Image (cartoon, rainbow, N blue to C red; front, side):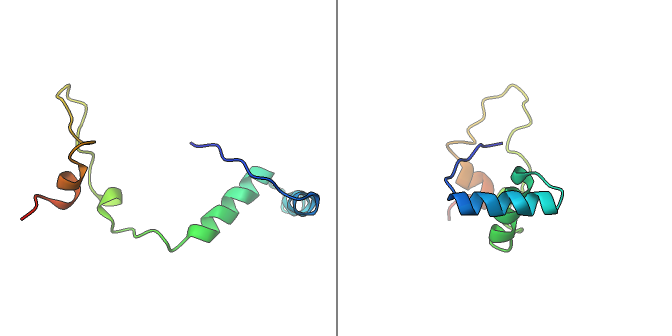
Length: 78
């Protein structure tokens, strides 16, 4: 997980706090829901990054995934 930080005005923070209390949620939960609602629909579920299996199964072999990720995701160039 990544930690993010932002600045809110006093009024924004108070409204956020009140909304969270009213809905029996933490501020973190409310902010996460807002982020998900904002980005929903902007992610292509068919993108190979979400559908392809890992390029390495930790067999001890050298993995060149970071250098050759396009080849693994999209195949060899013609």
